[in-house]
Image 1: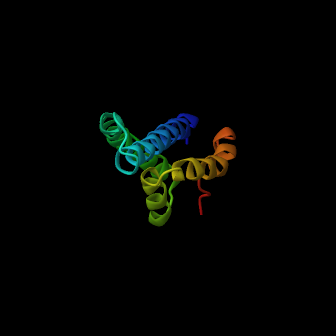
Image 2: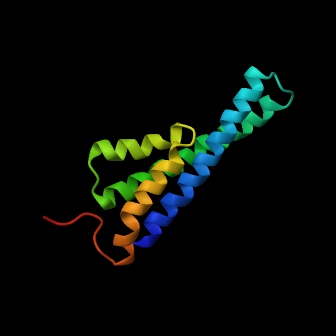
Image 3: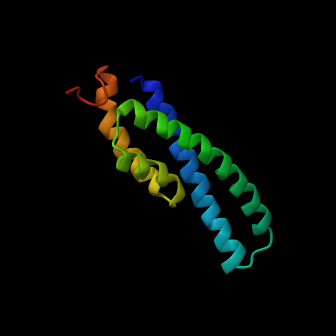
Length: 112
């Protein structure tokens, strides 16, 4: 597996995570605080997050298929972009798991 596959997943995990946290703050401002301008902010961030989440799904699925993850692990990584801050924790765990193997040019999963 190439390092670029892991890198693009990591970038999209951070982008998706940041946008989801911003969207959460926007929703709090819109509904709980009834803040002026929060509706426009929320609209822009939700559209950006929605489109970039699709890109995240593509990159995460590509990473998972190249790493030959089981379906449960793949689903866990794909859903991380829907829970505020989860993308950061999942990205860190996945990166630690795969970085050493990618640096050494080893396959992501040991061949049986």
